[in-house]
Image 1 (cartoon, rainbow, N blue to C red):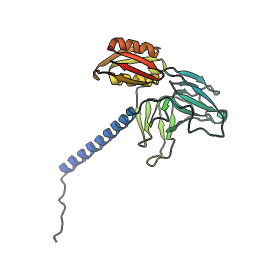
Image 2 (cartoon, rainbow, N blue to C red):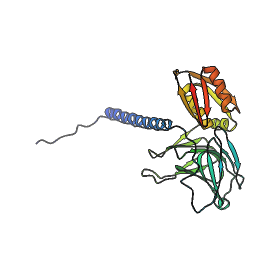
Image 3 (tube, rainbow, N blue to C red):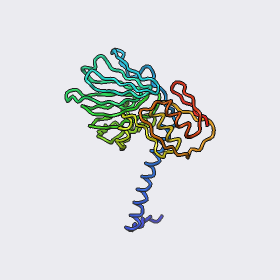
Image 4 (cartoon, rainbow, N blue to C red):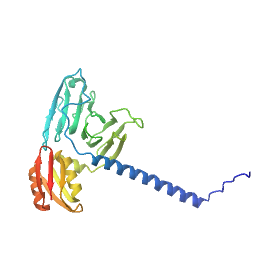
Amino acid sequence: MGEEHQQPVSKKNWLRRKKKNKWQRNAYVLAFLVLVVAIALYYPRMPASNSSSLLDKNEHYESYESQCAHRKKVVLADGTEVTLNSTSRLYVPESFSKSRQVILNGEAYFNVVEENERPFVVKTDKLTATTLGTSFKIRSMESQPGATLYVRSGKLRVVKSYHSSTDNEPATLGPGDMILANKQIDLMETEHYEVKEMDDWLTQNLELQDVSLPVALRKLEDWYGIQIEVRGNYDPGTKVNAQFKNAGLQEVMTALGDKLDFDFKIKGNKVVLKF
């Protein structure tokens, strides 16, 4: 048998291969992120359960719960301010004064009082956030595989709350940073967002600027902590333009129904639209 000789690769062809490989890697990353979003959207938003698998049976807790389509404000013993979004539950242990650790099942915004000697810890089933003093919003429901975290000010450290077979490295975040996580596929990615979005959420300034109807409905689900079911025929390409300030769910749905020609019915945390 003759010897096999490998032909030398020219510099031009090497550069061409390198560009092709880089394009393929970018395409794989984009496809992966699309899959993550698709999985997150597939699971409907469910209200937080009345208990949490993270609770210590040897500890006593005081719990705070927000009602459907309403927010609840809580001030903790250290002065930290918490805004619970719809259908969320916060557990504060009796030992909070020593550890400053709380457990969340749902979505909440934390404006943490700074204490250099006592870190503040928010634990969910997917993410654990630790800070000395900052403001951020975290969403993680035990009934869903996905979780998100948005930093508004200061710095914090985020790790997966469970043992990961791929990556257990912590992430350090600052203002404008966010975490996109999915326990089902063992993902925790750092991204960026516009801090104005957080400011709008805090001031309850709901803006829908030239977005498609499915995107608008998804934002309403997140904003009010509800599930929306659409019945009948409609054009998903329909653009929605509207702005609401301190508006309740009934007011928003009435205005959009008049503009987009649909009827609606609210029952608990579920809204049914009929075109």
